[in-house]
Amino acid sequence: MKATLQRGSKHRFRYQVPATKTVPHLYPEVPDFQAMPEVFATGFMVGLMEWTCMQLLAPHLDAGERSLGVHIDVSHTAATPPGLTVAVEAECVAIEGPRITFHVRGSRRNRSDRGGASSALRGRVGHVQRAPCAQGKQGRGQRARNGGWAMRPHG
Image 1 (cartoon, rainbow, N blue to C red):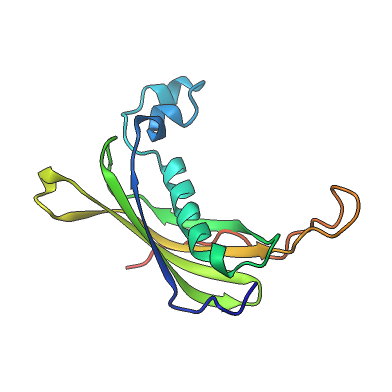
Image 2 (cartoon, helix red, strand yellow):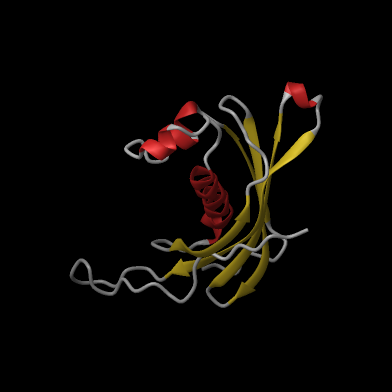
């Protein structure tokens, strides 16, 4: 990883929630999910959070490097129906060798909220870069460094 990533680096991302990212679409083969309301699924929200962290990291990775989430702890406090936009902000709060910890926060705006924002997600996410694959046979030399997703609720 390049030395350009600094504590305090931020990335903001806006995402309009499509119907395909609602709870019934999380596991379409599971009847219990089919019976749930059509709101942004926590499982897809976690992916959106990781995507935002990946975007923050991308310009700081060397060729062939990738990030790998290893731990997450998240609060999802607002039901978000399809068509609304979720704004996500990731901030790098710690860099400890290959372990990178992010604080991630999201919100949504809706005309019915009268311009107010309601929390949709928040917490901490840790990413670890993966070493580039070694030269040689495919499938060898692809060990990931220690780490993964790390997310803790914050106040």
